[in-house]
Image 1: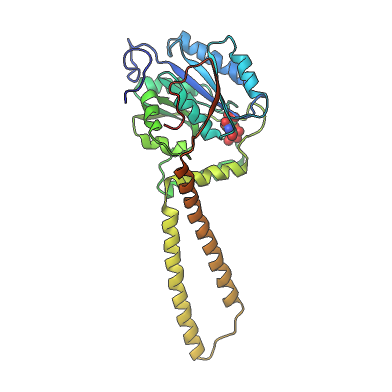
Image 2: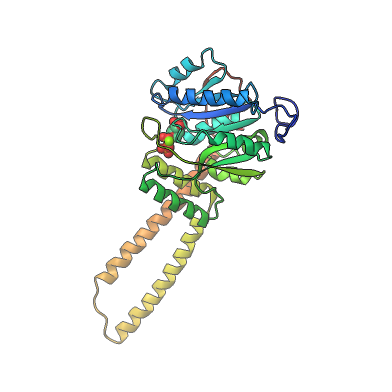
Length: 340
Ligand code: UDP
Ligand code: MG
């Protein structure tokens, strides 16, 4: 299938003499009424500069994705976008989570390039220039990578680091300190479209696309206003999804643990026989109760892990749409379908 590229020439090569690429800046928003006006004006003035410098085409725009917010987010987007051709909006029919909101933006956005950024502007806008520059030099995917994480709590930094290490040990190729702040070219987006998983973990999938990639470093700032929409519970959910979507090694570990433990039990039985025949066996409470708890725990954990994978198969097998568009403002969708 031939991607529908707007503009002439090859937008991926950059260089002089090429028309500048049309950029869509995608901003997922969930209950972000407090930050929207400030975020919108900061993004807009940046985009105006980029257009004036002919780094991006005039038809570039900012696309706010309302992820089923319960506050005034959508009406604010509508108000901002009214009569402003740089701003556009897409309203999802319900809250589908950050990953799906980002995906909805990427898969429906028109133009040659997309950049995804959070509404709270924790990710430094300055990196966008670097991303466009790297794209002009030939990168199809440019990762925004956090340098200093001073604004994050010690707990968040430690858990994030531990998680990256765990994923690495599990064989998942993931970019260290990269969240979902990134640039993608049209052909990278078209490749992503082929991944039809319902439960998408973008940070794990995108490195699998291949293409030329680059990294741009930036400092992460505190949230502009409002509070994090990612409490510990949702972080944990995303973390587990990230593991089970990309690695079946935990299942292998369970099998190995099972093998080792059953081998141990043979040794224990042998020891019991020996101690009994030599008459120094102590009628032990600990030796009965400890293994009981130990094995019970391991078994529950194993069943839980297996259940995670079965649940994943169940969810995937239904092939439900990943997002449903309720309304759009100021923009023509690149494609109408949500799932492929
Ligand atoms: N977000 C979303 N849907 C959700 C939760 C969050 O679209 O269900 C958006 C949110 O509006 C923000 C981005 O995802 O633009 C990141 O969320 P947040 O800043 O709360 O997460 P944190 O930076 O604390 O990890
Ligand atoms: Mg944030």
